[in-house]
Image (tube, rainbow, N blue to C red; front, top):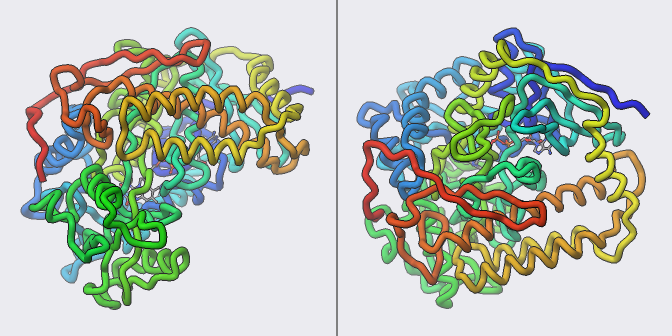
Length: 570
Ligand SMILES: Cc1cc2nc3c(=O)[nH]c(=O)nc-3n(C[C@H](O)[C@H](O)[C@H](O)COP(=O)(O)OP(=O)(O)OC[C@H]3O[C@@H](n4cnc5c(N)ncnc54)[C@H](O)[C@@H]3O)c2cc1C
């Protein structure tokens, strides 16, 4: 069977805000570009973003204040040169999106409305009701279609074609038919989004399985700061489905079983609008100390009743719908039950501001780029502020697209042949032939429950060591799975087995990074090292996976700047 080899200037994996924005730039610059995506573009997780996108353009706000909030929010781990680039470009980016057709909610005087978000010193999240991500995603999708960008939807990218520091393309198969193809390109970009599905309670789409992270790691390339997983304070109890921070931005209160507004204790000045790491820990602490609500006493109340129906319907209609559908609770009439939910991944594929993927702390991979949530540039450091990610994805996506368009003029198309697909074909064949006793959904549930328990909001050396051993066991059991569906049409059983292999690999990075970081910083909280240790850990983690699956940790410097690390109080 011969495998087609398609040739392009650029291949982009992922059709969320980062991938679409890059594709638009490449196509406008006259380059041939294709987007491969395992979902329909409009099903990308960017479309689920509710709350907003930050830009400091209000009269009494400033870019410098946005930078400061972001760096402080990051617990000083963000690279300040990247933060400066992002915050400086944000106002222009939002207006660029608006000019391309994104309809933002407005103030009475016609200016773009902005709402307060956690950890920000000024209301600066621009929004389109509580459907901001979908509005922006649709806009970018229209723009890429208008320009004639090629798309292949429901194609699963399973590997990069990588040789000694050079990426030459990707291999992928069509989920609809299981047919394979090779995409040979001068430049490859990963824009594959987040990986919150490693946790039991999470706000992420089912597709957020972090495939790209382990694809990169399996070639011996580093992953950065993987221990920093953001837990969002307000996921619907039981499912983790997101109640956007906009709920607290618009005035939502958090109450425990005694009816106390407990944030008074933890963040007296910012209250519910403290940063996410702090509010998530406070909620979890209330539950652990027995002041939880709900049948299992594992949630707290988010009370919006004082806002009134009109405001809720104008600003938060989607949230109301979600709470009615999944909990049967109407926020107009009663408080809804929420708990912390795994939400966002600060770590990822290390890149510089131009989006070039790092081979180690000093060298770059030729022809390989990344942007959006799968990358680590690092603008969020140890904790991301709300509305900074819907900003990061198109902002860096667009910028990286421009870098690629320039680089393509000097990059050559590297010769490859059909053997580039051998590894993928063998993986697929092995899985289809598998006839063991274990089933992927059961193993996945065990991974997710154990990650939430041992590597969640609170961590200790003991819990993380337990999790490290457990992941090794799961990897052994994974060798004994059975993929029951042996067919070629929409074989989701096969796809889930491949995805689970990726989840096991990158989860091991989260755990190893957390185990080595003997301090508490941002979203990473160790009960046994409960303070920040700048002397030893004001550093990025660079982690590498060896042949035997063991992970080696190195540390690299943070790009500091005008904001000196100081104690973080709210
Ligand atoms: C519920 C929710 C609400 C949020 N709200 C906000 C908010 O209000 N403000 C904010 O700033 N941030 C928010 N975030 C975060 C933000 O939405 C994301 O970080 C951002 O949209 C990610 O964009 P992206 O382009 O990097 O990835 P995504 O939009 O996730 O797109 C990833 C793409 O990669 C493709 N892909 C992945 N793996 C493969 C593969 N193996 N083969 C082929 N294709 C693949 C997928 O098909 C998809 O097209 C929210 C996140 C969630 C989960």
